[in-house]
Structures are given as C-alpha cells and as structure tokens.
Image (tube, rainbow, N blue to C red):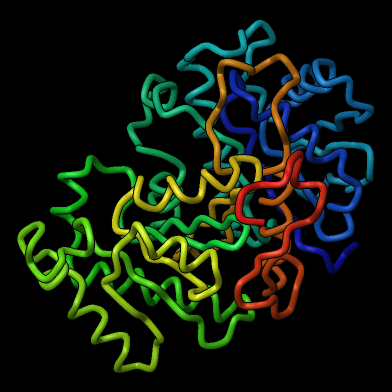
Length: 357
C-alpha cells in the first residue's frame, strides 16, 4: 500500500450527510486497492454515523498522518474535536460551519507539506459557513484562498460528460459581466491541460455561447459572443487546441454526451450544472482545476432533509475518491486512456442506471 496515494477526506458540515456518506464509502473495500484514505474531521461524529448506518467499521482517532494504519475496516480520523456530541442533524449551525472550514484548512496544510496527495471533500453548507465567520461562496473559493491561488476552475464529471465552468457562484448578471476573453481563454486552457494529463490526447472542446442560440449572429443579446468568446477561441486555436464555438448550449450538451466533444466549457453555473445533474446526483464528481493539489468532491449538498437518517447515497463520494486516487496517479478514473465518448465508472457507484447510459 505504500505506493498508493494518501487521500485526505474532509468531513464537511457535521450536521449534514457528510459523516454518513464517508462511512458508507469507506466500507467499499475496493477503494483501499487504489488509495490510503484518512478522514479529517471529528471521530465521535463519525462514530455516530457508524451507529446510524449500522456500519461494521470502527474509528481510530489519530493526531497525524504518520499515526494512520490504513487498515481495511477501520477509519483513520485526524480528530480536530470541534463537534459537540449533541449537535443536531439537519440544522444550520455556526459551530458546524466553522468546523467545516477548519477541516479544509487542515487538509490544505497537509497537502502543502505533501503528507497527503489529494483532497476529497464532503459537502458543506454555505449558510452555516457564513454563520461560522467564513464568508466564502463554497469549497472552490476556500481552497483557492487557502492555497494562495488567484484563479481556479470547477470541472464536473458525470457519465459521458465533462464540463468546466468559466464562472460559478455568481448571480447571472454578475457572471455575464465577469466573463471576458481572457478568462474564457484561461478556462479553456485549464480544461485542456487537465484532460491531457489524464491521458486524453488532443481533447475536443465545445464552448457554449452566453445567449440563446449563441446569440444568433447578434439577434439575441448585445453580441457578447463576439466580445467575450471569439478572441479566446482564436488564441487557443493558434496553439493547436481543438476548441469549437461559441455553440448553442441547448444542443452542445447533447452532442457532448453523444461523443462529439470530450469537454464542454460552460459560461455560468446553471448552464453547466443542470445537464450534469440530470445525469444523476449520485454519479457526478466535482474537480477543482488550477490548484497545486488535486481536489475532488461529491456533486451534491448537505441534504439536511435526510441527514442523520442513514438514507444518504454514497455513490458520488465513492466516485470522487476513485477520481482523486486516479488523478493522484496521473490517470483518469483508473484507466490509462478511456474511450473518447465514455467515462467509465465503477459499477458500485450506481443505484439505478442514469439517463444517457
């Protein structure tokens, strides 16, 4: 196991489903063939999740990565001791919000000293995060801040579809105002570099327009496609990057799922998130592109409505861990060079067959 990457799993908001999906995911023995997982969180909260889910696993509270044994059946947890035993599930809590931030900060610290090779995050709650004194829109922005990186991108991976976002957690008007040709160009290049490193040579990239029908030659909007996208496309094409656009978003995602493109560049949050989540919340994975450390995450929230019931599905967490392990080994989803139009997922990730398969 010494050659396998160590993956630091942050527990997320302790009032949400994070502890449950971590416990359920680490009961998948196959994960231990690919990585050495360590949870950064609260040992007693994980024990409560074990009790709720009737898991056969046990908890080993540790102080450092060196203390971990990486035994199948036992969860190594760097215990920060920040969660009261009586913290209720399913409720906003400043204590849980602050703890979620501290779990991430510890993970970044460990990554910066190469004690862990990747970070995999359970969901946090943005409201609780603010209540806890940390005014960030989400994980992506926290990780960029803690890592001292000015600009990163969010990439979502789902069955047969990869999407990278030019903007993320902004209102629609603010997002359109922020988009410019430089940001679009940098996003395309980050997506291209990530896919090449993952073993996909000469990836084909489809770039969304901003307006309906990509502006229809100026019929819709104020020629934002010409002002904000066209120059970026010309610049990356000069370097041999196969990027096409701007294309109407209402057909581009279908074409990508069909196999025409290896990556879609979405201009704003819901333009990219909607198609991915239609394919199945349990199958999507969030990858932060542009950090010095690999970071993957589940593509769902804290699910306060079912937190503490044991009903949460661990599929996205399992796949996020597979992706983190594979990327840490300079591979994608455990395959050297997957087929262009297919992203294969371990069978255990799915409870039902998602659309598009």
